[in-house]
Each structure stands twice: as C-alpha cells, then as structure tokens.
Length: 268
Image (tube, rainbow, N blue to C red; front, side):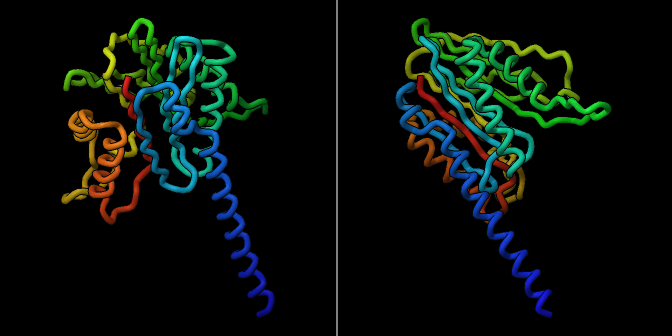
C-alpha cells in the first residue's frame, strides 16, 4: 500500500509541476506579444480581444514598423494548447524575420517568406520520414500613412475595413501558412485599398464566430460578428472591446469556450 500511495503522490506532484510550467509558459508567450503601449505608438486607437481556450494560445497578434510602413497581423495556429502555442511563437519570429531582416513591406512577400521558412522548419532530414505538418491561418495589413494606402494579404483569413458606416471584406488565399500537404503551388496576393483617416480595420481568428451558444446553441457565425463590429465602430475602440467581451460571454453563457479567440481592431 505504501508504494501505491507513493505512486499517487508522484503523479500529483507531476501534475502540479506541469501546471506550474504551463502558467510560466503563458507568461513567456504573453511577454513576447506586443503591449498596449507598442500599439499606441503606431496607431491612434486600438483594441485587443484575446481569450485563450487554455493557458497557452494558438492565436497570436503581431505589429511592426519599417520606415513609413506600419504592420499588424493576426495568426491562428492549428489546434490550441502547448503545440499551437509553440507554433505561434515560431510564426511570430518569422514575421519579424521577414520584415526586419529581409525588409519586405509587401504583405504577399511577407507571407511567402514566412511560409517558406515555416515549411523549412518542419522539413525532415531523416531518410524515409514524411509527415503532415501543422499550419497557420494568417492575415497581415501594411499601412502607408504617407499615401493613405492599406495593403492586405491573407492565408485563409480576412480583413474587415469599415468606412462611412459601411464595410468591405477582403479575403486571403484559400490555403494557409505551412501545411505542405494542402497546397504545393502557393501565391499570396496583395490587395491595395485607399483609406481615409478615421477608418477602422479588424483582423482576427475564427474562435469568436465559431463559439457555440445563444438560445439555440448554435455558432455565433461570421455575418453576425461583422454586423456587430460595424454597429459598434462608431464608439471608441476601448468601448468596442468592452461590448465584444460582453457579447461573447452572453452568447457563450455556460457553454465551454470552443477555441482560442483573438480580434484586433485599429483606427487608421
């Protein structure tokens, strides 16, 4: 009986160690992501809705600046939890590499470089070994304030551009970053749009709209989210964040959170 108790105690100790390590990993991951003060340097107003399903998230957000170009991106890695969190950190650093080392400012060039390096990261040097690697859905905007041009490219993610109480949705490519088994011939196209000061843009993962809930326990859905963002776009960004959080919790009610959630809003 003593040995059995010792085994149980050991398992409990291991579980506690794992939980403590996960909490520390959460701190490290969040420490890598840009802070509010970094957004405030680049943009007039913004909000960050970030709700991991677990301690570590497969969703992430990124900003950067190179000369006159300001960049913002949101990524959604396969799954959630530890493995997805590791992929998010890898992709975050690849975005830094594409912008600051390669000095690409065209969104399609940035995505292509990230995709290439991502696939190289998962290539196997072991003869006869093949596997289906994970992937990332990613959207990126590059803002040229000197010419009032917004450039966008996406890998299975969209951009919402709100202007004059209307909005346009720009779609990305139908394949992700990585996932070589999904598509071998990749071409990420850049869309360029003129914007006016005061316009808003929104990028995000699919966690919010896929959340089950409501009276009939159904998905929130993309159309409802777009209409909500448009309706709330007339209030300051911080108020939008509060309203989004409230809507999400009301919709979810006592249901489990389905996935990581991340939405970024920026006032241009």
